[in-house]
Length: 145
Image 1 (cartoon, rainbow, N blue to C red):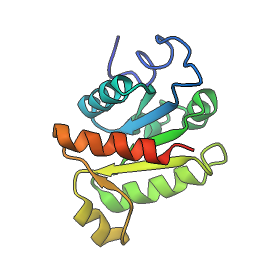
Image 2: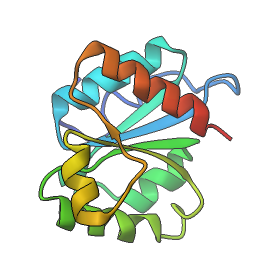
Image 3: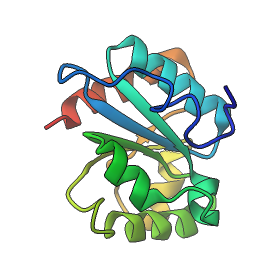
Image 4: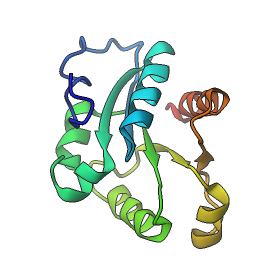
């Protein structure tokens, strides 16, 4: 399993999710964070598929195809520096037809800096500490339709 690949080790190698296992998509720039979030969410009973934001930006990962194929109930998306450029990219992503109306949990390593730049956001601050991960799990549960 190649953790750097956008789809290997995610949906293709896991059994089909049951209706009791909502699909959660995790997008982050850090391979370690993607793996950590996938592990925590899977342990909480979610079916998790992952993508790496640089692969989306470079076109290596077809985001529209990924979303259409997996139909995640919630998307956990990280906004990293440079905040302005990545916030703008996220706004464009959220306007894509297959993404419109999907529920997002936003994460960042520096919420005050992001809020200062783009205004108050509903982003969670995640630094990778174990107690922060429970905030993400709780936010995912709250975001489920």
